[in-house]
Structure formats: structure tokens, C-alpha cells
Length: 298
Ligand SMILES: C[S@@+](CC[C@H](N)C(=O)[O-])C[C@H]1O[C@@H](n2cnc3c(N)ncnc32)[C@H](O)[C@@H]1O
Image 1 (cartoon, rainbow, N blue to C red):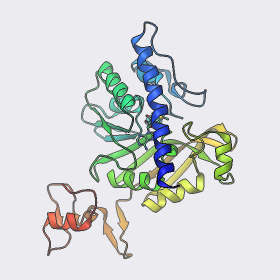
Image 2 (cartoon, rainbow, N blue to C red; image 1 turned 90 degrees about the horizontal axis):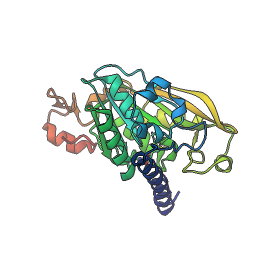
Image 3 (cartoon, rainbow, N blue to C red; image 1 turned 90 degrees about the vertical axis):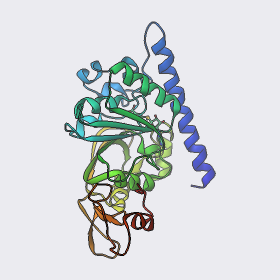
Image 4 (tube, rainbow, N blue to C red; image 1 turned 180 degrees about the vertical axis):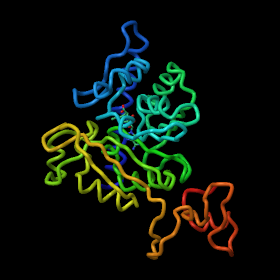
């Protein structure tokens, strides 16, 4: 895909979700409340348990555009830090915030201003204090390395025009031993890209879907282990909503083939903790971080 096509596609996605957010916000301000914006029964709030829906503001439920409930599969624990890629109107951030409790935190990252505004308004209505919505893309996540316990996402990775970057960034922000619990659309391995495009468009979460093998290989290439992809329901012929799970190993193979601690990924041991030391005794911590060229420069 050339640079112009990538930019155009991302802008088309942004416009589509900006319009959905505006529709929900208008409905929220009207007397009868917001109408759901999901396209059909395979997407949206009907995929959540009634008690999850009932605990949230109407605007968060109405803006739901995912293909599952990632908070139900990510086994979130009190005190954990969770990141939702493509957080939309905030439904999964708000549910995560309830699960991780006051000692934990739920972040959402989204590139669409209208969705971020809607999510902030929903967080205020929900009285959620342990949430933060960040403007940014899932290909360049605005968080430091090794800081998140769990990454969730709901039907967003298929929309990315640079999935290797999404997987690499997800790996970077997760702590060693951190995990992903994502819902996404996945295609049968036999379907070509053109056949996926015949079944639906990119902004509707169909044409950009990876196959099972592509998803697995993409996550493994980024360093993930224990990849499991479990289809839940069909969304088109040969295409499925699926749960994707994987973990960031506590130790990874260094490019040389030697095993090193992932904590040394920024050129320092115990990166970004008070105990950090330079992996190269000839360098200071600051010099080692800047020589490594990785995102953790603080
Ligand atoms: C299908 S909606 C899903 C929203 C939410 N996860 C949910 O379940 O309702 C896609 C969301 O991802 C955001 N998005 C799409 N591509 C993105 C990207 N490359 N970086 C950041 N956000 C993106 C859109 O702005 C939109 O809010």
C-alpha cells in the first residue's frame, strides 16, 4: 500500500467514526437518548452482558461498535493497568476501570477527536476517576515502554493500515509477562485479500482483516508467545469475530541469538524503574537509552 493510499484510508476511517460519535452525542443531548450506531447484530452493545450495559452511561453503550467484549476475556485483576486500542466512545475503558478498581488504571487511545470527546463525557457521567483517554494512533502508542499489564481492543486492529507497527507497539508498551486479550475480525486462511474486500469494506471492519495465519505470524514476529485465536461468531462468509490472546514473554531472544532480559531492551536493566542500570558498564543510563534508540527515553 503506498503512502497516499494509507493516508486516505486512515482519513476515511477517521471520518466514519467521527460521524458515528457525532450521531451519538446529538442523540444524547436530545430528549429520547442516543440511538445505537452499530451496523448489525454482529457488532455493538448486544454482545455485552446486560449487567455490563446497565452499569454504563447510555452514550457509551450506544457508541459501541466492537465485535465482542474484550473485558470479559482479558481476566482483568484489581490494580492492573489496562490499555484499550481504539477506545471509541469508551465502553471497554469504563468496564475495565470497574474491574481493575481504584488501585488500577484504564487508558484508551483513539485518533478521532469526536470519539475522544464522547469518551470523556461518558467517563464523567460514569464518575470514573481511574481512566485516561489519549489522542494518538495505535501504530505509535503515546505511552512509555513496559508500563501496561494488559492490552485490549475491540474490532480496531483490522482497521490499521500498518498492522506490524500495531503489534510492535503493543509489545513495547506491555510489561514483561503482560498479555493481550483482543476481539477482532479474522478471515479464513483460504480467503484472498480481494475475497475479503468482496465481503465488506475497510471502514466496516471487513476488508482489512488478517487471516488466522497472518494474525498468528504477525504477533509472533513482534515477539509474542502463546498466541491463541478462537472464533466466536461469523460476521461474513468465511470471516469471523475472534478472541486473540498472547503474552509478552518475561525473557526474549536477543537478535544475536543470546537470551537477554526484556528489561534490557532500552539498553538498561530494570528499564524505567528506580533500580535501572546501564547494560553496558561503559555508558551512563542516559547514554545507554539514547544509544538503544528505543521509545523509552525517560
Ligand atoms: C470499530 S470502532 C471501535 C470502538 C470501540 N473499541 C468499541 O468497541 O466501540 C473503531 C475505533 O477505533 C478508532 N481507530 C481506528 N483506527 C485507528 C488508529 N489507527 N489509531 C487510533 N484509533 C483508531 C476509531 O476512531 C474508532 O473510534
